[in-house]
Image (cartoon, rainbow over all chains, first blue to last red; front, side):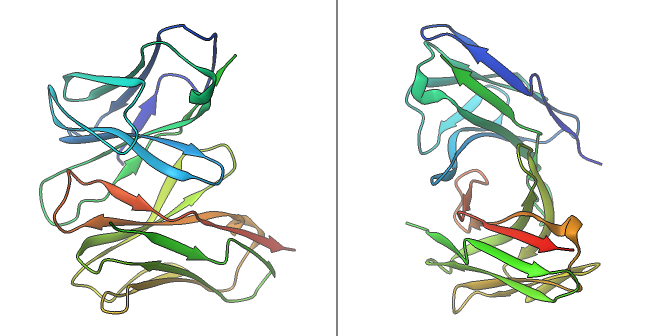
Length: 114
Length: 114
């Protein structure tokens, strides 16, 4: 079974702090994604990565950056956390090989910025 | 721009009832469509994935259908159980993707009463 893990289930940070959210997948997937989920807005894509060291902005990249130094790990960075970044953050991965390109999600990180 | 809509937003049914959840999308140029389940405060669990060339997929009591020409998918749940209570999300992968990005509907919150 594919496993996508996220470093923390719950995180509380102060405004202005630099925050790192880590995501690791164990299936050698090329593509990895970071979404945020908010009530009434659904899931929105922040950034995604085609492969190691390759990244693309999603729909809402402002205030975020990402890092993918190794294939299995995709990090989301909040350079200076703000209260409007309080949200549920979900990481996902998928392979680009074959026709079946199912996307697998991690358990999520509930981030609160105070 | 692809838009995904799920109706109804919430549904409450008695145990044992068969039910249908609806998903519609505006652009028929899709690569695949994925149905997910999300329990409160948790990540997404993939239920079914339908390729654009397929009409339906089945897994246990779940059956998902796809009609690209009309921009619709349905998730049929047979003999519902209280354990089926969760939010169900559909997501569409674009044909000319975009790195595998999924566009999500807002979800249908299902409650199955014992």
